[in-house]
Every structure is written in C-alpha cells, then in structure tokens.
Image (cartoon, rainbow, N blue to C red):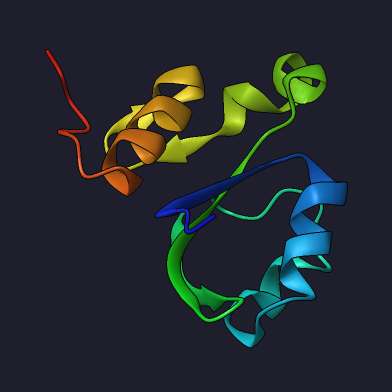
Length: 91
C-alpha cells in the first residue's frame, strides 16, 4: 500500500504511528494534540498523517476541537478534506 493520507483514530493509534516517524514525535506524549496535518515518510512512502479523535471520545473532547474557522465535528471533517486535497468548506 502507498497511502496518500493516514488518519489515526485515538491515542493508541496516534502513539503507534508517532513511533514510526521523527516528524510525528510531538504526537506521542499528548492526549489530544491540536488538529493538524504532518507531511512525513512511512516505509519510504511520502504521506500526510492526520490525528483524529476516537469516536468514543467525541462527546468529551469534540466541543474543544478547532481547525481553521471550524469547530467540533466540522473541524475534524475540514481537516480530513484538506488532507485529501478537497475544499475544506464545501458550503
């Protein structure tokens, strides 16, 4: 596989991925890092890594989630759209 985007769901997946690339090291110690994308190499493949909240934590954390002009679930969706190269504001 040669994924253009890798999205992690939750802390365990994010910490696992952080151990694979030096650019992601800042993700490991934080429970909920600020949303963002990191360009990195995984297994020699250039990819964009995105940290998404795990659905089980949405109700406790989603209200504080911000990305650009978006908040909550819209922030998560905008982050993924941008990582995929799609307009983050489909409206």
